[in-house]
Image (cartoon, rainbow, N blue to C red; front, side, top):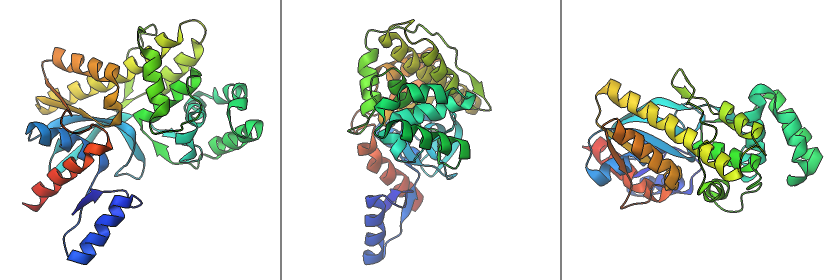
Length: 299
């Protein structure tokens, strides 16, 4: 039986019950490894440098992953690079109210207080909630995430596109819709330090240019920055490791602009590009990756 690493998933609990009932071995597969393994299984690849981008997945180091560059085989993976870590004020509440994530990202340079006060009326408890978020950010006792989805959510909130998530992926999906027909007006070259793609500078640039450029252009610029940065990291890793295949998966792979930009950069670097076609790139395709990993481990 194969399942995710996350102990609280219903599927993990079901897997644990099946193991007890039927006396079977249990193999727990890291979320983003499974995403890339699903692409590998679909195309019959033995190895790949994977770009795994989504809202959240249980990380091997105790943080919440979601913007990862991995080297993957079926029975092995290694984290090569990732997006900058940001705190999540209120944990899961930050996924429901992207203003919280935006504030956390802006807090890296103490830009959060003024902006939070300017959008206080968009929070359920207004100024009182702003005070709570401020205290959380001061105390720094929050889960950390490298999630690509949360960065997109924060840009969506800063641009006034979505302040509350009412269904899975809503802020990022509305950002993608807003970006249609836009252009990269910010033209920020990816900032990478110690294999970490910095995202706070880009989010601050979006805030600084509000009113100067069209919302669609700022939305497009944010997506372009993330796509370019992740593609460059993956290409660099593939060249260092001598790997020809670069695979993209995770819920953010549904974003056509991001996927198209990554594909273009990978192909220009003369690497092979793969993404899910027969199974969903989101969590609907995880089971294929989990089974592919489990089968190889059991051999």
